[in-house]
Length: 163
Image (cartoon, helix red, strand yellow):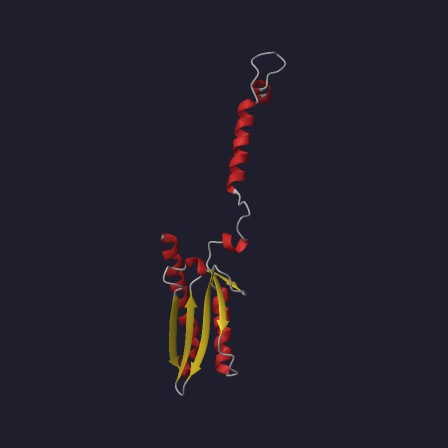
């Protein structure tokens, strides 16, 4: 009944024009096409999440380092703030993690490099991070290091977005 009144072709009464519907549909299609990415960027560059490349400097066979490295890998992979990458790129943060041990302390040393696309005029920003704990409490070091890394990366990304 509604369709008959809308498109009343039989009686020759005022016919409704398809023109407004056609224009509206065309505008909606153009709006959808304008919103889609055009393919100029790589999929990794389209993401808003910072990307992180992790390198371990110490390849020691010390079982404590193996435990710490496993714990670090699990904590870094479980973070949703960033994406881990295997290969270094211009738009990925790079962190190099080393391990030192003495008689009574365990130390994780990290060097965080900002991505090349966040470089300032003075050069690439490098931040050194050092966390240490007694040997008995060494398994808290990965948690502390990941917290500091998260804070530094978020701060750097926010500063870059403010520019």
